[in-house]
Image 1 (cartoon, helix red, strand yellow):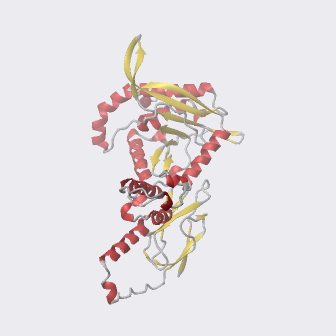
Image 2 (cartoon, one colour):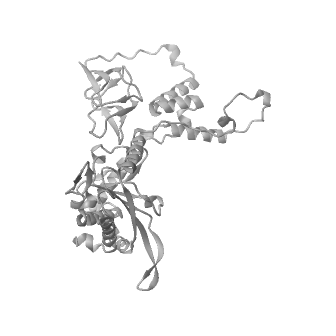
Image 3 (tube, rainbow, N blue to C red):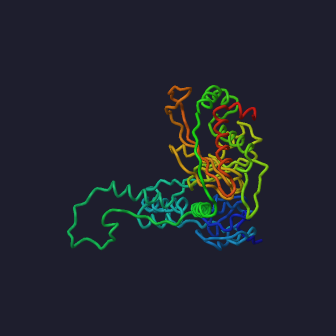
Length: 409
């Protein structure tokens, strides 16, 4: 029986996907649930498993094609018989080692390099052995090929300068050794760009700042860190405190947790907090659902899982959809100050920065404290300055007196 392989249903916010790389070719035997192809959406890379075992008889859409939900991209025959492998002829058994090595390298390239990368490798006269893949599953990207090409050029011994008459006609960039690379934006990067422009053009964004003394949180964390890790098998980080402090503030000022929908204001009676994390494909924001009902342990575990699966490209669309408020921690990269951009349709976002020891005045005395600048960007169409400032002050108070978080006072 022939089965049409179709693009799976996509969320309402995602209209298209791009076929990244087929892992099978026509005539290949396929096991049930074996991954056939990777599909890149605006948010994640999805794997499309085979619904049944059989033979992939036809590929309708090739690598790089833009497809929509329900579109047929291949045909699988569950009743097809696998043709027995032909016995190799005698001369083939005497293949020269060099030829075998070339064949092996070619096979590796086909298996691990993305289509655009394979083409660029041919242009640069590189093999899979010359390039270290940094993509998902060790796959080779165009950026990897360009890096390898630059490294190979810098390592190659310089030949005697040829005469002007013998120089070939080349572009100015190549002649001066200045390499440029033009690659299409990934769907994720395109979507990020669209949403940032949308946010800037539709919301009246304003940012308010405050500073927080992180000493109380650091003392509490240092005191219980070892016992926490021993009891729960995970590290006690700082993000759990920030999430709890945000929920504490949003409960006091619900409008900061609301959103604008046309001429209506939607007040959310739940707290779905987005936590921005880095991935090989760019910044993604998985959502901590019902963060107000989660313990420190649950928050830290889920954030740790988000970070790991973001690196592996395993986050699901559901985990990246929705959210009522976002926390962006540029401090992990060393940022001291920023004005984060709101993630529509949310109305506010908290920017957390690097904690640094700085001189501050306490009770008329100059002391050194670990200080962190906090930035709250908000949509002034909905949130007045009073609520924005007071909500940021509430976050500051919760972090400087963590008992407030635990006692909800």
